Image 1 (tube, rainbow, N blue to C red):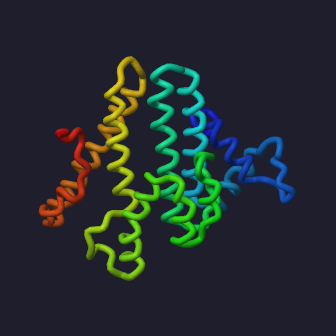
Image 2 (cartoon, rainbow, N blue to C red):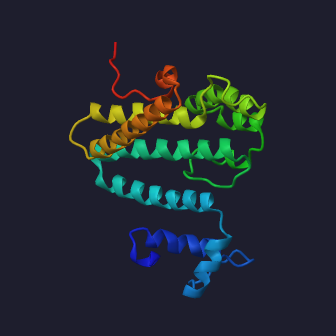
Length: 220
């Protein structure tokens, strides 16, 4: 079934990687009877992240082949999305060996606590700033004060950074990246509506402005 889907090629490579021999030599192929056993042993989140990594790399190669403004805009968007996924995985599961985009992730693969994460991010001021912003949130969470503070998680900040990045795609003309950005902004709009509905249901409407990510805010 998986082979006939658009993501079949990604699953095939993932299965080969997951079923490496002890000498780290990948097998030539995977028998159909082996697939169920391999998938059962795999962590679903790691599987999802690995497949997303393969898709991002493939998509990035495609947009680079388009050249021009499309390559410039979409290449930047995909690089940032990959970097954000690395930060998200790192913050939520320290000591992971996943690397979604080669640049800037070599040191992150070695981290094991807040200090080493910060040291790895020091050459990248934008990401270091994001880490400093969310550190208080994770400190509060580990201290049993989750939900009692106004600190933002890494997911919250990434949503906001992504919205700004997608908005900026509209600043240039004659490229296909604008369609990708439009779809992503629509997805955020749907998330905003869901968050607003949840705040209404929980009778916490005062927190709506702190929860949603505004899209195309007026610029001074």
